[in-house]
Image 1 (cartoon, one colour):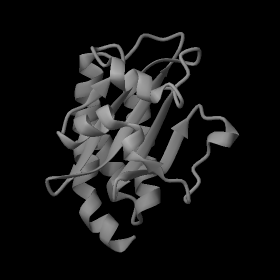
Image 2 (cartoon, rainbow, N blue to C red):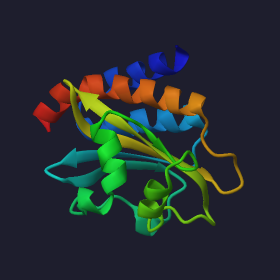
Image 3 (cartoon, one colour):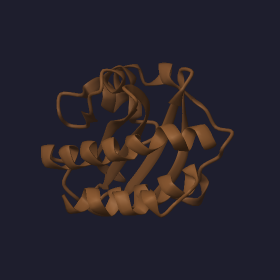
Length: 163
């Protein structure tokens, strides 16, 4: 798959966690035609954004001190921990309601989260959105995102050890 090769090249060209994740997020955004992509760590029952790429407002920039309790997103977190993706508009009403605070429907037509799995454990997620004027994500988009998140997860163990 061309997307996986592009992502592997982006990962291999970077030595530190943040630059590697940013390059990976840009590849994922391009492959999905997404408005935004956020790569988030899941640690000790909270989420922490690592990088955000795309059409974000300045006030949405990553703050390394920000922590978001996983308890605020119980359905999404449960799906991620079960190694499942979640997609707005696909029988995911609870997930949609959990995310209304961060994905306003007037700006976003759809969103998805796919787990980043490293050494069998969920270490984070790739979260992507589409513009309100564009179609929502398809099952093919989810498959691409899952494949790319798996490739990203394969690099996490040694990168997290160095961070």
